[in-house]
Amino acid sequence: MSTLPASVRLSLWVTSAYAGHLDLDDAVSHALPDVDHVTGALDRLRLWQDLGERVLCVALPRPGQIATLPRGNPELVGAATTSGECVFVPAIGGALVPTIEEFGPEGDTGTQVTLTAYDADPVPTHLLASMDESDIERTLREHLIDATQELDALDAKPWAGSPLRAMADDRTAMREWGLPQGLPGRALRIIQLAGTVAAACELGMEHSHATDISSETRRHRLLLDLLGGAETALAGATTAAAQSLAGLRPARP
Image 1: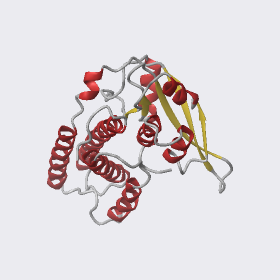
Image 2: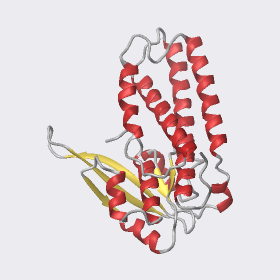
Image 3: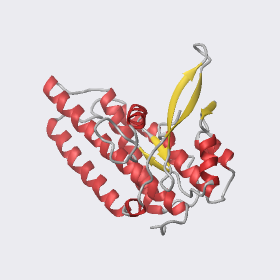
């Protein structure tokens, strides 16, 4: 399974289908090419298209960090924060939360994505229009600079004395693959940067090279905070790119 969130791919490919560039079934296949079986509320995607929705937005929430989620009931919030992702339609309201599972016997496993539908409130147009790619990119880069400086001060760099850099390069190389044509340049650049930062943070938290508990605690907190910032930027840039694909905002180079 690609490390790029399934909801990011679904948002862009399904919006491309809504814009008439390909069939909806093909869009789902392109969005999840390394998934063996997709089940659940796939019919919602076509229903939303039939009802006139033009864009599928994305949220990447975490506990305590749900600003990108549309307003909904506690069931939606709980499922989306547990999964760490969801897609939603802004005009009529509604969300899908993916659950990713492995199935089959050991040595012969496959990957299944189950989409569960939840009610959600419509999202005001002005909130979507306010997603400015330049602000998203600037905020992410400032966050990255600040976190890097603090990690340097701890002398607990995520890459020090380990193969993590090569592992991160392997992960992030996948992130540039499999997105639809026609994405605006700036949004694509942010998606790639945010995806790279998120992969680095995840690897850094999986492998510790701190010399004491205090440094490790601070290092983990810094990486977790940076991961949250990267995912917020990734969700914002993806939704902005989807709006451009739908013709709802001008593409910014």
